Image (tube, rainbow over all chains, first blue to last red; front, side):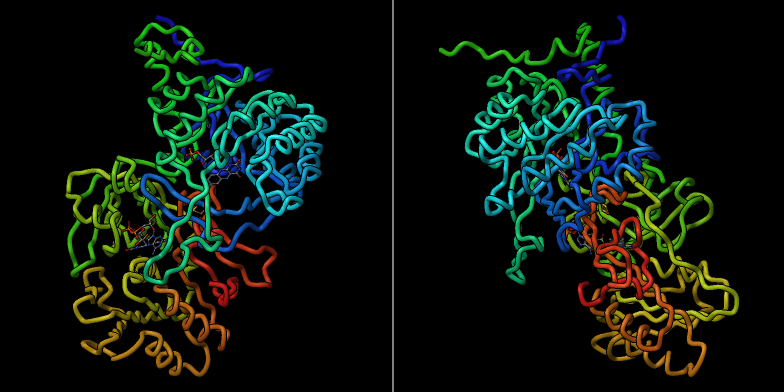
Length: 309
Length: 262
Ligand SMILES: Cc1cc2nc3c(=O)[nH]c(=O)nc-3n(C[C@H](O)[C@H](O)[C@H](O)COP(=O)(O)OP(=O)(O)OC[C@H]3O[C@@H](n4cnc5c(N)ncnc54)[C@H](O)[C@@H]3O)c2cc1C
Ligand SMILES: Cc1cc2nc3c(=O)[nH]c(=O)nc-3n(C[C@H](O)[C@H](O)[C@H](O)COP(=O)(O)O)c2cc1C
Ligand code: FES
């Protein structure tokens, strides 16, 4: 049989395969270039970018938890200007999609970063992180309110010439409401989930282990939660859904595709196994080939729910 | 830098909680410099999930590199159960190494407990001036046999917190005495160990303006400069707020760090 066709489309964006790296876990790609051939990836989502550079939180910033980890990096990054000058040129040379993850602490700031990327060559799409605190609303995350999420989306779309993916926060009562609001606002796709808020305590000193007190939980520990949210959102919206959360191997990836995700992102697994993404791509090929599946998109949303008695 | 499954050639106990692990990797051996580290995956599964960072403690021939480690938690306990012939996934060598002393320069190495690991590799590599190796332990039974690493020609001094061997007290007191012997041209200082000890070493070095390099430990998720989890505060004279220990270190000149924030 011919090689299975792994190409997929996320709105106007075509990817050579459905396997992307998740923001914040793969730096700007170059960090992994000694270890894997980056051009084999479906795409790279770079570290969250803000308009001005940000130092991030004081250490300790990470702690391991059962089958996962908490991070409170604090969205440390070099800022738009340095990114364009120092990191983008190497990314542009890669033969893979480059997606820039952006955030702000006000709607204006989201707009500024999006505007700064307008017209820039070699960026395939923008992913909007709406999980960060809104300073105008007392630090409540943008992504917990459907109206504010929609307004952020509108502003980014207005200032951008690229496909816009909105990355949803799982720290909400009903993630479908947010997904539907950003779809209505014009988002080309949604990705989910970002990390789940959690904490860890040192029992000897009775102090939080992270200097920031709380952090975001990622890794296999969150996979079932992520999978169910992807399933719910895929049913609720008509735009493509990108599944993220605890994906380690191709079996995990397949669960997300079957639940309705058009593509997936690999995050924490990159730390454990730098080849995780490439192994997943290989695993998907073999899975399709062995079952006579010609195109990966035949799997997307193929979930069968047995009839209820 | 490589990611590979390396064969365990031996994994033997040297002291109650201390093990010496030899892994086969001509690639890592060819690149390894004193002060660099590797990230080891202690299980092929997902629990414990993250790799553990360990300094390279030396090389043997063209094929083997050594890790000297202390069992402190689950990951290292699992590692201590692995046997010759099994394989461990190794990522490295990572980070920057020590700047070796130039001709005629004397050195003093100051280790606290398992902090001897990177300094053993350094001591083997130094081929300039005279070197003294000061190591501090909690008690006699923790003392590591430095002779095993071909360092018997070196001046080695030991301290124990409980006075069961060598100087009764802190290794930083040995350092103070050692430095007092040099009214001019003091030796370069290289150090690794627990933070309170490094703090004192840095204080002594900064007071006399002696060049001093320390190897730091922080929690690390990636080891590659990708996650920014391993931040340490830079001195206010630097043009940045944080360094990343896995990439900018783990070895730092003490002048570059903000010791009050460590
Ligand atoms: C650059 C570097 C070099 C090191 N070199 C050595 C060495 O040569 N020999 C040696 O015995 N130890 C060394 N360490 C410390 C070693 O990494 C920890 O002791 C080890 O990770 C503990 O794992 P655990 O699962 O047994 O402990 P647990 O406490 O169960 O670990 C839980 C989590 O905390 C992290 N952690 C715990 N203690 C430390 C620590 N001191 N530093 C960093 N992360 C920690 C672990 O990696 C793990 O993610 C080094 C650390 C760093 C950063
Ligand atoms: C260290 C770290 C940093 C992260 N930084 C960002 C970020 O800057 N922007 C963002 O949208 N998500 C960020 N994330 C979230 C991941 O992209 C991903 O959504 C989450 O980790 C769940 O996937 P995983 O379980 O595969 O890691 C970060 C995650 C980790 C572990
Ligand atoms: S451990 Fe990830 S950047 Fe240093």
